[in-house]
Amino acid sequence: MISLLVYKLFHLTGIMMVFLSLGGAMVYAINGGVKANNQWRKAVGITHGIGVVLILVSGFGMLARLGIHWPWPAWVMIKLVIWLLIGVLTAIIYRLGSASKTLWYVTILLGILAAVLGLFKSI
Image 1 (cartoon, rainbow, N blue to C red):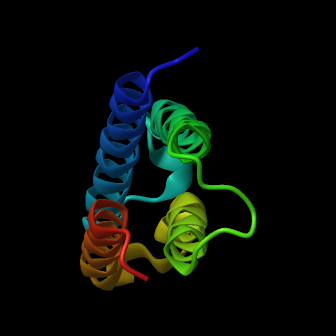
Image 2 (spheres, rainbow, N blue to C red):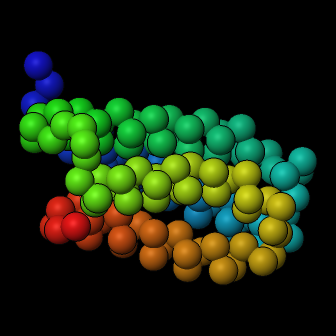
């Protein structure tokens, strides 16, 4: 069986991968880059996709380790929605172009909310 600590390591690794890829894509789009000309588009997409999978799989593993089963508490449902929103951001970034500046701050706020919910498990 995989320990809770290993699940946390995978979860944090996935989070770092997702935010790294989103940051890179946002900076590129904000500076006027278009999706078709992004030489790192494939690497960004792969990093983002693997990160999201790591987050979700390790998150569900941690829930099982903590003995949290269906019906999930509200904080779990909210975190799941947050990570699904963050998961679709790469598709939105290139469409918004320089307007992705707003997404920069929204992404930070979503990350903070997910962290608070995970740390305090309060709702």
